[in-house]
Length: 287
Length: 168
Ligand SMILES: Cc1cc2nc3c(=O)[nH]c(=O)nc-3n(C[C@H](O)[C@H](O)[C@H](O)COP(=O)(O)OP(=O)(O)OC[C@H]3O[C@@H](n4cnc5c(N)ncnc54)[C@H](O)[C@@H]3O)c2cc1C
Ligand code: FES
Ligand code: FES
Image (cartoon, rainbow over all chains, first blue to last red; front, side):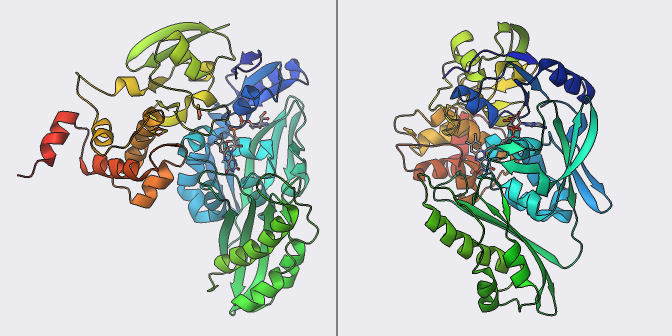
């Protein structure tokens, strides 16, 4: 279908973009790579008055190694993230999950910031940001602020971003030596959204699990941290039986959706199985 | 309305467009480049794949205004001097199409894949083309065609490519 009519501006700087968004009012929208927004417009599920195109801004595009974290600019494309040497070396979980998003053509245009700001509960990167306790750097004409991942994802397709705010980038903490990572995504056809996904980071010490971080994709209206699993994993041997036992409660506190792909009880089952697989892979233990 | 300049298959066009005009509609309806088809409403099928500044993009998920100042390569610009591009030749020789609806997008996606991975494994080919759906072939011959295209090294034209495959 042909999208509804809207105005379009392409500011030359982040500051100009913030002002354009403030002036345009509540019904304006940021356009980054357009890989979620343009399909929504084509399906006439969104009726913005103005699109403020930040997709070509050079400024928030960089990926930088900054001491204890990696800063990933919001308009870095998913393809740039997947291929980034810094991301692969310092925060590999981000690259592991980003390469499962969509397909090469979509990753050439879709941006890191866009996939977080869109906050689709089936999106792969929100769970990663939550598992790693990323910090979201947000700008508007009113100034700049930082929001932790735990406060960023608020409800179905809803984030802490106010209508006049732009996500500038994300600080991804480096967890340091000893951590292993894995993103386990379950889907039944090529290039498909996660029916359920699990992001896991595990620190091993003395043959056991010293610490773990686990977050779930598509098990509720927002990504969810599996805190019960994280607690149960602390100190267990990194073998298949012990890990399976600790992951048995992976679906606790979740409210998985029912849709064409799966019923909630099947998603709960998947969460338990995929969490075990993700944790074992992250711990590099044999399943 | 917005004024944009695009370079499509080596020809410069200046157009007045509504911001909501999709790149694929600019190509087909305004510039007559109907070699790029539309297969879906959800940006899933990949039939409309073109190269935008050298990288594959689904032209139904790009606004014409976003392509302002960009180079666009469509399937129509591949053959040079009446000779097929090696990927076109490989698709022809391996029978990598039946109805042909997915073919323009498949070929553009395959060219993009070979740009970043000149010698892809079968698995890499399947992954590289995962954004392109084919309802006819079952993909088997498409994978073979990309492998054949990869075995032709360098940006050679169709005739040279065919010549090379004759055993010495
Ligand atoms: C065929 C297909 C398959 C897909 N499969 C997957 C998948 O498997 N997994 C997955 O996670 N995603 C998938 N996606 C979704 C998609 O890849 C991402 O959601 C998308 O790339 C978002 O980034 P964007 O830059 O394109 O955002 P846009 O489409 O430009 O924007 C999306 C939303 O975020 C807002 N926004 C964007 N950037 C900012 C910013 N910097 N500040 C404030 N607001 C902003 C926009 O206003 C809009 O509401 C798929 C998409 C397609 C078309
Ligand atoms: S028509 Fe563009 S992806 Fe289907
Ligand atoms: S040949 Fe018919 S869809 Fe691919």
